[in-house]
Image 1 (cartoon, rainbow over the protein chains, first blue to last red):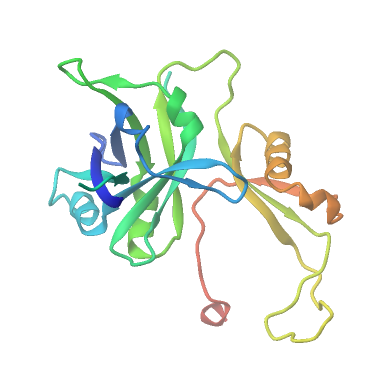
Image 2 (image 1 turned 60 degrees about the horizontal axis):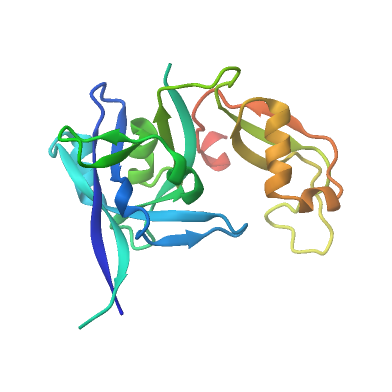
Length: 75
Length: 158
């Protein structure tokens, strides 16, 4: 088994410019990596590159990808 | 009317090179979706406040919330508001107290969470932290949080 990052969506600045909007593929959620909170609550874990997010906030990038870790069988 | 529902949080990774989002799986499964223009792909839309996210990116805040927007608001559903719950019950240790006995009688923060009202905030806090009842906490003060927190050092404010 190997862990790979899979693109599951994208993030961009809202039209009003006061929020970041994240769009995630619903079909990818079943395969997305989950983590369990101390109280047993299950969370889907997503990850984004910090430099790219800085670029969106500063207006240098329009959008960037959002990934999740998925376990894949090798061979 | 558009309703915003708290479904998770975002924080900087321990390595400091990425942002990590954790969203409640149970809510995601039943959340409303939007379709792509060609109608073949379903997306969930989540939203984060830019001013708070900037602070997380800058390292001034540890986490901020992630919300889900939906258009239809059930009748009688009140908007969520953030509350801080404090208590004067119990005693605490001052930073230089290495002894076995607590030496401060101050307020302690028991919880900070989103709810539709103060009573619901206390109820949710007890659901998440049932040990508070066994610890003997009884009287609490529930404050709605109306502004962003300011972090400062006491030595800088003398």
